[in-house]
Length: 267
Image 1 (cartoon, rainbow, N blue to C red):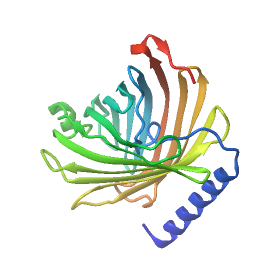
Image 2 (image 1 turned 90 degrees about the vertical axis):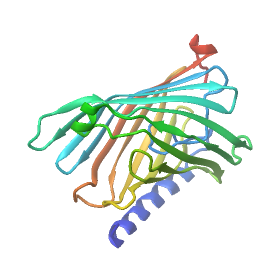
Image 3 (image 1 turned 90 degrees about the horizontal axis):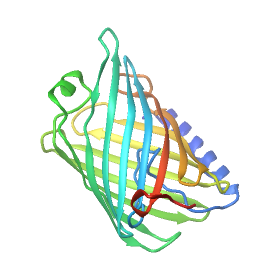
Image 4 (image 1 turned 45 degrees about the vertical axis):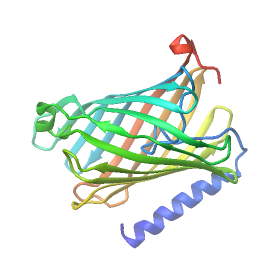
């Protein structure tokens, strides 16, 4: 990232966080959908958290759409979450035919091993297995060879009026490249229904370029009991060179169910 881009990013993030700090305080906000960074939160015993969304990534010469992006989460006890994620990818490249198909799936298990309650320190590990994509999907560039194991750590803490979520993860180079991810989300609810956040995220495949860092802003809005609208938009900080993200967007709905999915979860 250039010095000018870094200064601009720092100014934008600082202004947004100061603005959030001056707004009335609500309940705790978290990472997780619509953001790339995950948080230590789990749905709760016998509860479902279902995220159905579309996600768009535009780079120089290509665009990728996840239509839909499916993210299923089920709580076992108060600190354990079973997860299954998979996208259906539609990809367009300059001077090439459009390709589509199921991308790599991510089954996983999250364990929140530290929980100091609302506002205190929370931490979890969230190993996920990136499954192997089909030969057709790999040939079209919409999935990668696998499997690979992702080993991330998530940490959350309220500091003053703001809530912070941090994630650091590492892909073991097993049937795939060595890769490292870093993410930070900061924000807070501004009304009983609306939460605003800012995120900075870095994804780097070791030994290759570019090193991709994105900045985005997002919101969660409670539509109804058990239904939350999810929105996020951002872009890369590395300019418009090959491999850099020119636009990143997410639009979806989160469905919260209790009692093994029999009832909508109360606010």
